[in-house]
Amino acid sequence: MGHQQWFSVIIFAAVTLQFAYCDVVVTTKHGKIRGITSTKTNTFLGVPYAAPPVGKLRWKNPVPAATWSPKVYDATKVKPGCPQKGCETMNPVLVCPKQTAEDCLYLYIWTPLSANATTSFPVMLYIHGGNFVHMSADSLLFDAEELAYRGQVIVVTMDYRLGALGFLLTKDKRATSNFAILDQRQALVWIKENIKAFGGNPNMVTLFGQSAGAQSTIVHLMSNESSQYFHRAIVESAPLTIPFKTEEEMLFISNMLFDQLNCSTKDIDCLNKYSADDIAEAQLLIRKYPSSIKLLEFFEPWVPYVDGVVVPSQPLEAFRKGFVINKPLMMGTLTEETRIFIYEAYNQSLSALEYGLALSLTFPRDILNVLEMYPPTVSPDQRDQLQVPATDFIFTCGTRNFTQNVIKQNGGRVWTYVYDHAFSFPGWGKFTFCDGHVCHGSEIPFVFQSTKLGNFTITPAELKLSDSLISYWSNFAKTGDPNRGTPVALEWLQYKSDSLWPQMFFATPSNSVKSSYRKEYCDFWDSIGYTPI
Image (cartoon, rainbow, N blue to C red):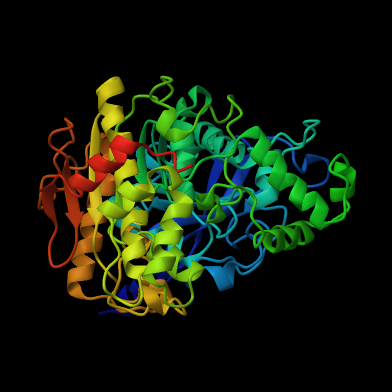
């Protein structure tokens, strides 16, 4: 090879290397945004979708982000998560933000490398969980590079106001609550207006979320205002029987915050003298006190408030009132959803007497029927047994009731699943009682295939499981049917009638389709209803 040929090779290699690690710039209605190009995706970190909710905008509905043109916005570094306290002690690893700030309304966007202003990739917007008080979109668990790359979709994650900053209500309506839900809607609006610049199709948006994010997704399914901005939904582990707040209940917990900070309940100016961290610390302190006679609200003290406008209804009542919008829906739960909550609540063994007391406090009207259906075992520790009726009532059967009503009300297209795989790696940190169990959230690292970020080694069977989840999830985003798009090994049957409840069982070594999961128990809960007190 001659000198000129060697020189050409060197120049080509240098240009290729530079391209592989160069920044990428897109032009939105607000101005240009600089992101990062990796070997798999273009990534844009910390893109503002609303004005910072600080100063006079604290406890106000979100305001659209300001234009920054002619400057180029730097989206190459993560932003702080929304204010929160106690995340590290109350949650597993990889979900908490490293920093927090009240200025926190940002998006994280991953696109396929071929995406540009002329392409039309489907878009998936993820709402994180965390009991409406914890976690952040920039957490390693929700890194969407693999989902975007393997699924060939654009994935967006978002932060939204948490706790009191997201839900405070005052009697004089100077704070009107549900700011968190309106933040999420504003993110949907931003995607509608800007995602084309990133190569996405604004008319092919899938909203999906887990836990509190799943509850939020259902709120948007009930809202005519929100529903115009997305076209299908995936609901992962929604605790459908944990009730949203009434006005009286939201005022009560809001007033507890005023009292904790030595402010009159009529003096929101007093609250505004405190920092966001002070408010987050105060809401953590009041969490140890009961804020409702409804025992289940202990797990989610700050939840959406049924104001009849932003949040039209309690989810399981929404069908009777005709609120749920007809969109393709994927929805499912895990086999041991409540184990993590029960072991957190009871840090020592639970006797048979205490087991009965826990159920009687939750279901006083139907306690004899509940105990007949779920008698204590002979074990000296009833915590494992308690998670069975808890998981059935809060997750499994509430989800079946919801999906059955989807079919009855609007004949909607619905696919349901059960996830039944426990990590092979030590992914729960100090929550060792979840090791070897399918605790709430077990599917998330496999949906995002984010395990590598925690330096966890997964088995070939787990990689196969994760790949199948990505295929079904991304197919649904592309076509509205989890079976159409990337070829799948097993057809996921659509749920069409009450008599046959086919579900995809996600597990290792292989997935399967089963019918009528927990039917006897769900028929029982349907017969007595889902209002515990």
